[in-house]
Amino acid sequence: MTFATLGLIEPLLRALETLGYQTPTPVQAQAIPAVLAGRDLMAAAQTGTGKTAGFALPLLQLLTMEGPKVAANSARALILCPTRELAEQVHASVAEYAQHLPLTTYAVYGGVSINPQMMKLRKGVDILVATPGRLIDLFRQNALKLNQLQTLVLDEADRMLDLGFSEELANIYRMLPKKRQTLLFSATFSDDIRLLAGQMLNDPLSIEVSPRNVAANTVKQWVVPVDKKRKAELFVHLMRKGRWKQVLVFAKTRNGVDALVDKLQGLGINADGIHGDKPQATRQRALDRFKASEVQILVATDVAARGLDIEDLPLVVNFDLPIVAEDYIHRIGRTGRAGNTGEAISLVCADEVNMLSAIEMLTRQTLTRKMEPDFEPEHRVPDTDASGQVVKKPKKPKKPKTSGGGGKRNLGKWVDSGEVAPAEPSIKPVRKVPVFNTGPRKKK
Ligand code: AMP
Image (cartoon, rainbow, N blue to C red; front, top):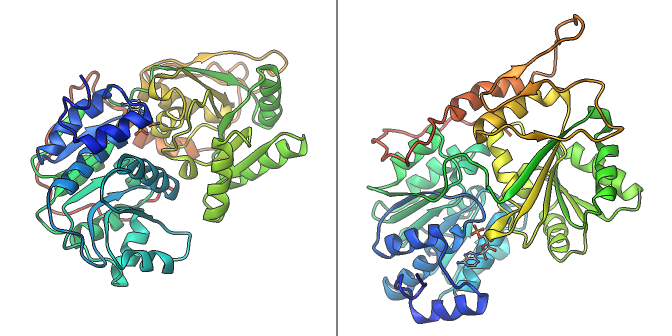
């Protein structure tokens, strides 16, 4: 199969040739004809599957072939993304695909001045990529009208809900014309996502290109048990031993990111960090430098690193395990992209055993443990397996722990969403649901 047989027009084929895309990926093979035919879409696609081109190419074609010229302060298509970085990245891809088309594209997000964005929107743009909060600001300030909107794309919809955007999405939903095409992409499908889809989609075609909640199988994954206080030391040891060249490291908190970056820089290691407290320009600079291999180690929180596409990234290290098990899949999805192989190493301490167990249950695999000589933990990490069992073998009677329940508190939710029926076939059409779940979500 080629992109030409999917019915794409010549200017798009030319752009793809320049980019070296020869064969459509599975999500593209399914999504492109469906979107061209005007269908709504509910697509379960992991990161790195080529989903951006899956929605962007047919969208660009429809906008070129159909519909009126864009009016002032209007957008004909809107792509919503959970984070600023992702919005930039999606916009960069869209602009590349559109290079031979007479269409305008633009990205808006918070953390930077709104005025230039308002100026830019005056003439209208064909495709607007946006984060939800800034989109609403622009709408409320009359810088953007949405009555001309033909298509809405929700990219990484699960993440938008995880980040607490359900209220914003409900507001945006009320701003949209009733008659429109809607495409929803999500790596994982929780009940909340199905609820959202029930509200927003009209008789959607369901696409699933990889089993639900299963991590990319091109990524070799393992766990190194270690005491919490020795994680940084172990990281440096493994880095030197493995001669790691470029590593994306995930830490749980902003302070955790800063502490590790300080430690690495103190050792003369070329490291930088990104998290939500840093100004947008600083985050983007760190990311650009990492992508250009000018920074060797980039330490990030989940929020900052969501959906980033870094070419040939060989290694992801979970310095801390994620609080939400599904984030593990997203994190390791940063490597092993577009057919490359990758490695994901998690440094796990005893406190994190519930998180490890939830991840194994969600991904339906028991992660291999590799003990690093001289770093064997004093606080043993209890055995876990894909059934969600934590096998505790107390050697001596201990007082029950009174704290450290952060992971446990979330376990309830993980178990719910991890209660993934084995080999469930695909997303079922969702029944009509009267209202959104508009309550703010607690999770960060
Ligand atoms: P995505 O899942 O959209 O983030 O895409 C992952 C990576 O795959 C990006 O670097 C794309 O440029 C690349 N890609 C997408 N589609 C293709 C294709 N058909 N052939 C080769 N590379 C592709």
